[in-house]
Length: 198
Ligand SMILES: [Zn+2]
Image (cartoon, rainbow, N blue to C red; front, side, top):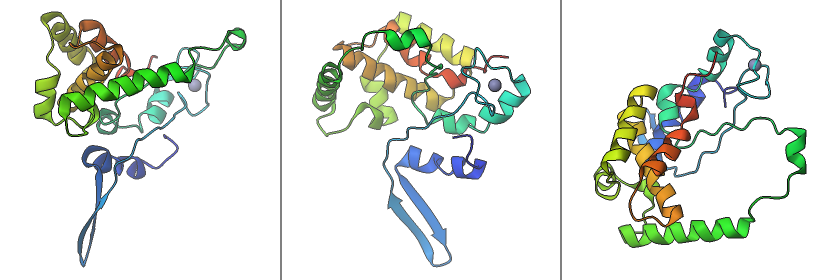
């Protein structure tokens, strides 16, 4: 993603937020549907070091590169997952959980969302009002989220996105209520909100 020009990256903000693209020309404004799932990848730095932990670039070099992913853009991306280079020993490990089992969990989580909203809406599509209704937290989970907000300097937009992800993690587990561990995992998936390590 950081190989794209900044204005190209920023132009993703509107469709990611509203699910549509508005194009203004002399003759008027046209609105076009643009609901999509964004999957993007970035190296930790321009040199393409194997991981942030093993990056030999200076903090300034790293900030120039990953810094092209602006805060408002990152706010609109639910999951930031760091994928370090695979060690040789890890290639010998037995295969993980089969896709069939994962699929069954996803289908069950979708079914829970269908029952919750009765409109075909998914957790990702919750309005702020629905987030308040469907993502209630107990005291421990609320304290954890408040602490993460302060520590990572999350915006209100990112706050709601963390809640939606936490709701989905709880749904994948079949849990009726969002617990602190679901919030913790959702916060864990906001890796690029943390300052990239010097
Ligand atoms: Zn590097």
